[in-house]
Length: 357
Image (cartoon, rainbow, N blue to C red; front, side, top):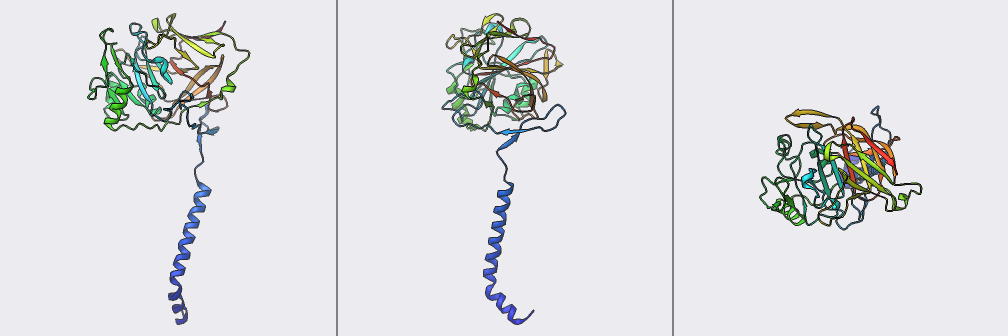
């Protein structure tokens, strides 16, 4: 290497270093543009576990990620409350204010329990609040919710002790989230409300902004079904837990009944009405005593009832933190009619019927 070259290099090495740095920055930007992640997500796998499609992430500003209805609190983190389905506790308070409700058997005799999930409206009274069940915890995780309960089975409490989800337990209740009402008999006299939950969440440092993408929803113009007629969806939970949804085409909603009695909200004494109902088929197995374990991981069969019609579907929940989602026969995520959504989990051998009127 000549002496002249060495001298020339020393004179211009600063410019060479700058040029190399600019080259690295430009190369990095090109790579980021070419390989940046798209705003899409895998929707489902088919029955042979092959990926068959993608859909837009479905994020909509200004609307609830669960109900699809416009609301001021659409970014608020969901609150998932365990509520009673026992006949003696009816009517429940705050049920019609929920964006979504999940009902599922929890005991060998088929007795169900419900989890009401709130985004837009946390009412002034919610209850009766009941104990946690382990099958509901992964569902609450999928909703990115704060989980609210009154004690729980040891299966549930063992999981919650691992701090897998932010939660409030009335048996501990250091922040007075819960209260009892003397007008209702124990153990159905436990209640809470919006102020108690939100104030305690702030004191404990719980995140109050939602990370939930939620469900896809139909434009309201797509909800008109000119040929839809009245009908009844019957779900044969045992005993007094038997459920019926009567479709009213004049308002495109399903009025809820239990044991042939209207499902009322104690807060306003109005009947609860769903915009859509999903019947999820899931097997269960015996655990101990009277407790069962409902298999709600992986995938299985379901039916969606909305706009006066019925549609076969497949539910999909790949892990405990994922949202329980629903897909049609072509693998596309189902779009729901905006409004309150009910998810009814039932064992495969139970009868579900739809009868037009």
